[in-house]
Amino acid sequence: SEALIHGTGQRARIKGWPAAGKTGTSQNSRDAWFIGYTADFAAGVWVGRDDDQPMGGVTGGGLPARTWQDFMTAARAR
Image (tube, rainbow, N blue to C red; front, side, top):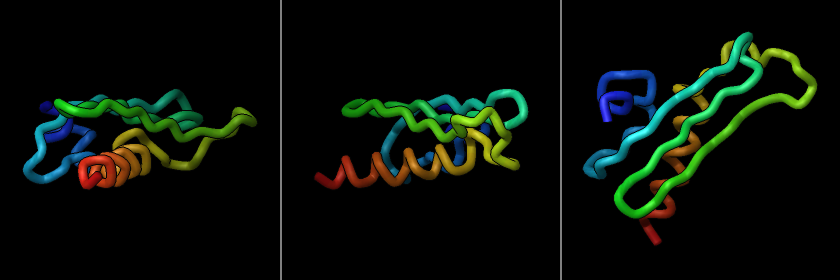
């Protein structure tokens, strides 16, 4: 998908494995997520706080996208 090639989801890209996904960040960075899929798997990663405080710069294209990439890479290897 364009988000993984040119957009905010570039950190989720897995070389040689087509995927699509969407990043998201709530107002004041209280929540951030990456939802993505390949031909074989679908997964979502949410990062947030349960005390309604901002996370200081965490965005969906950062930690959630990298976590999704790590998870999908491990799932592919199985």
